Image (cartoon, rainbow, N blue to C red; front, top):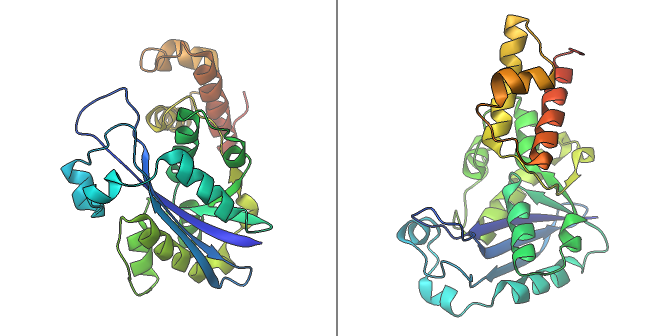
Length: 253
């Protein structure tokens, strides 16, 4: 089993737009079964939209515009990356949060490529694992974890390979404390984090007031006025989330 620590950078924009943000850099580190650093992957990607990097992204990443201009497009780079990953007989992806894999899946679909490689891959959210290890709830950055663990900071933050290297060092430091059985696969979500947080907070409020409601009553008296539930998939997803939050507090309706 190889451990692949993945990081991506994506472009941004200064204004609201229906056009998608895209992956502009992929960086990855391969650790073998004994956590030895054995290989790396790094590539810039020329986006279809917002190909001119705005000042914030330039400052944050330090990626030169002229290098983006001559970079290969996503189909070529993702093909190369899949080939690189396939050098491992078996691998588990590690990401800091769930955004990296989601962005890759979204770009794969945008380019009308087969996404089965990515939806079928297992990944471990190292951010969640680190929070469980530290017994805290507030998110932390990779840089903060590096500092907390006393790992010497090297390389460039907010460049994909540099961040992947830092994340790999965090993994190596805490690996023995992690339950890798909590690996997961990409799952489409039809609600956003704000909507799920809204439901979670509402369930906590019901717990504190000891006034529990069924989903239908909850929607009618509270949620329906604040969240658009016309999408049946979103409605079903939030209902399942509502029920799971109730189950966590030991309440059955």
